[in-house]
Image (tube, rainbow, N blue to C red; front, side):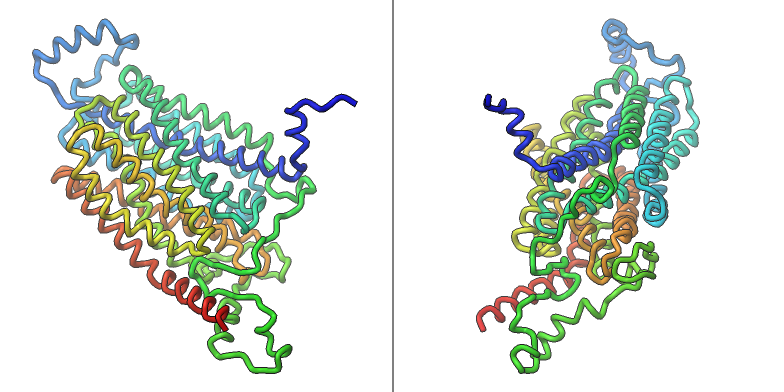
Length: 519
């Protein structure tokens, strides 16, 4: 018998279950990357919507140069200071209003999205959201081609897009949580969550390609990509392993680590009073029963599938703390997402295209930060402590970034990578591994349908911060960019303070476990 080709041997070395998991991992990665791809253009186009007016001599020479190199003719009523109505002196407030419209709608819609998503098939729900998102993303760009200069047109496009994009996150996290168990969830989801940064990078590059010649295409092309991915979602997304007769991955650890949300539970036979005939220590009884007393009623038994209520999800230990922490973490991350290209344009004096390209380094750092956070949290079995450590390092790093970025392009590149890792690391860990852990908390008694609601609550609360950050940046930046960075450092400190109770529980759990092993 002839030897199998190397490629075939590679394919057959993996089981059917493993191939399905790899496929779902890749598909959900691409689906949500396309969502972020469609959010990025607004930050790139800001530098084109408002330009710093040149003197008449400079303007005449620029017109001659632009006539030679610019293949697309500008609309006749485009202002030399940008695109009306963003060509006025209050342009920062108007651009901030666009960000706030999208993010506020996203935050409000997210709370409802999880509840709706639990009651509808994920494939249909996500497909509808992606098709609608593609439409509203392209709608913003059509304002360029149809010479629309009404502020409310752009605000309504942002609000509608923000609402429909809430279908994405609860759906993909629920799907990936169904397919992957808790064993190495931090690392797996850290790698998977790099879709956020990959989407931002691709969105920046696509938007920057057309921003100086035809900024409408900076929105239309991403809109078409999101809609196309929605069609692929409808054709190929598998919500649960059981739908294709694949095995569900069980937890691979006998120890439970619940992000500081409850005391650790050490499953050792010597703890059983019936076996050793001795009463348990009062503290150890508390360790074993703490999370049992926080059981959340879901309306069905252990294997029930009823949807959890909003208040029931809030009673899961750790949900409130991590939700509020994410509010401040996302405030920082989304301020960078929406304002970094404009900041680079002002500080480094680069055009919109080069500033957009350079801003992608922040997302490159975010990829490594998310993976590192997942890897460390898996190794230490401490989600809250990992987030706290990165938040502690992020605040001084932001101060250094504000000072060093004025020293030259090389220093800016280095600080973009470091800041991206430390800012996006906690954000990535909370929205993925932590949300999945809490959504499958043992107090839910096996109700996997609660994952969508828990994810929506955590990310929805975080999105409130995501809405406030760019708005505050727009209001504060006229007084100086340094004040924006001070605001971001305060937000990082608040995020850390909100995790202190959970960090203390994790450290106490570790101390109790170490003491038990010594005895």
